[in-house]
Structures are given as structure tokens and as C-alpha cells.
Amino acid sequence: MNIHEYQAKELLGRYGASVPKGIVAFSPAEARAAAEKLGGSLWVVKSQIHAGGRGAGRFKNDPGGNGGVRVVKSIDEVAANAEKMLSSVLVTKQTGETGREVRRLYIEEGYRIQRELYIGMLIDRATSRITIMASTEGGMEIEEIAHRSPEKILKISIDPATGAQTFHARQVAYGLGLTGKQIGAATRFILSMYRAFTELDAQIVEINPLVLTDDGDILALDAKMSFDDNALFRHADIEALRDESEEDPAELEAARHSLNYVKLDGNIGCMVNGAGLAMATMDIIKLYGGEPANFLDVGGGATRERVAAAFKLILADSKVEGVLVNIFGGIMRCDVIADGVVAAAREVNLNVPLVVRLEGTNVELGKQILRDSGLPIMSADNLADAAQKVTTAVAQATEGVN
Image (cartoon, rainbow, N blue to C red):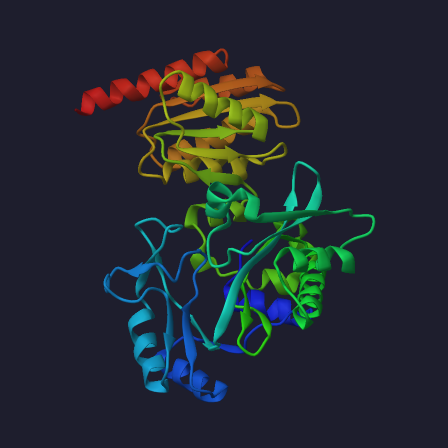
């Protein structure tokens, strides 16, 4: 689960990490009031969307504007920019051309910046450890740094038996070229960041940029946090920060039914039980010349209702021109799958080719349910047969339309 920048900064601040003062605003009037409350003579008006590259982005209604992060020097400018930015669609590298509507802003006090650095923490799946990543090239995407200057990325793996220690943090600080009192400030920041990461069950904490100000302070000028969905039951306060307007509606609907769903760019919908089998199904669809439209794993203990919801979710995608259901019934019974598929196909008035391959517990009963449904469902004997049938049927249907 992702959260907004201002929410991430609030959480990091609770753990003692230094963050600029800021106030969230949902209207130009609130933006003006926020700037007045913050005081000073320099403010930053920041679009709050779940995507990076906001500063270099562009608004669809103002392509020649100054992007989604704007530095201003008067309260009137704060209000005027808020007027332009709110309810507008911001396009960045990460949003694609569809962009994201800006529904809230973060009004933050401005600083004179001396240096921009990068620091992030994530779980390295190769070592099963939290890894600290740091670079002197702040303000840039870490992937770009890794491609262009990999030697400028410092990585430190943390042993879970000890956790992050002072010497780890000081090693990062020295690696970033910090000196004097900056070493102590950076050490405190990194250890606070690590506590937030571990205690909140985060997957990623990224500060880009971490800045040194003209006054010698170290601050998180931007912050990104992502959390392990499987641990949210321990953090009701974190789950309450979810902004559903920032999430894909299909994936949100899938989550409500405990489905693992990821939308792809193809035209053949897939419903499978088990992540490994789902990957194999997508691979064999490509092998036979097709393109999968989604990854959808109904899990091992799906009910008839969950299967029906999964099927309707697939067909809600206008790009889907055929569906392949591939089920190996172990914990999952084939008759339950068949019941769900038939119920959903009748409800949505199925009008695309449907191929079903069932194997395992109650397979004959499942196949009988499909035969008795009276629906134009093609049965497959094995995975290769299923992939060949669905890709052929989609190709023929497409040729018929053309």
C-alpha cells in the first residue's frame, strides 16, 4: 500500500526524522490559510499523487506550466497556483499519458538548499535483509543513477539479528561526503528512518532528495513510503491513510474479494489458482502468439462468489477478447470453479470465446456443470491445448469482425 508524501513525512517525523513543516490543503482557500500559518517568505506548493517525477511533470490543461511542484514567494502566488493545480490532471513519467487528477496539495515551508542527496531502504530479496541505499546524486531517479553511474550508489545490508547500528549510519554519512555536525544529524536521521521502516512493516522508504540547507540542517525534502499489505492488520492507523482514488479501480475491486489481480496490456483474460500456475499460463499464451490481459490468482480456497467476482472483473476490461480459465484443483475444487464461471458468464452475457481447463478434485463434476450450462464454453485437455484453443478462437473472432 502506498501513501502520500505528506503522510510519509508525518510518520517519519513521529520517529524523530527531520522533515520540513507543511500543511495539506484541499482547496485554494486552505492553501492560502496554510501558507499564512506557516509564515516565512518562501513556500513550496506540491501536488499529492501516488507517482514520482511530479516536479518534472506537466498538467494537461497547462502543458507549458511549471509542473506539479512549484516554489513561490508570496501568499497570493500560493493561492493562484493552488487554483491551477487542484482538479487538474498531472502527467509524469510514472503515470503515463493518462495522468492523475490532483485532489490535494501540500503547502510546505521553503528552504535554501546547499546539496541534494538520496537515501532509501528496502527489503533485498536476494539477501532477505533490509538494505540501505544512498547516493550523492539526489533529486534523480535511483534507476537512472544505477544505469549511468552505478559506482555512486552505496549499499549496506543490515543483519536482522542486530538491526541498524550507529556504525551503519555513520558509514552512510561518510559515504555521502558529510562532515562535522552533519555526521551526527545524518546518523540520527538514518536510525529514525530504520525504526519507522521496521516498526511500521514498510516495504520501501525513500527520501529523494535528502537535503543539506544553507543553515546546516538535514531534511527530508521528499518522502515515499510503501507498506506490506499482509501486515496491515497490525496497523489500522496506517491502513486508514489509504487513498482509494489513487488506486486502480479494478485492482481495488479485486482486493475487496481477496483476489490477486494485475492488469496487463493484452487481450486474453486469465483466471488461475496459484501464482506459479498463473505465470505459466501467461507464458504459454505468449508462446501460442497471444497476449495476456491480466494476472489473476483466485487463490487456493476461493468460493463460488469469489470466482464469479474474478470472472466479472476480467470481462470488465474492454480489451479482453477471450478468456482462459486454468484451474488445478487441489485445495480448490473444480466444481466450485465451474459454478462460479457459469454464474458469472450468465450474469454478464458472455460474448467472447471462453476456454476452460480443469484438473484435480471433482474435475468430472466440474466438467459436467460446464456441459450442462448450455453456454458456449470450450473445454481443454491440458494447458497447451487450452492456450492454443483460446488464441485461435480470439484470432478467428477478430478476423470475423474485420
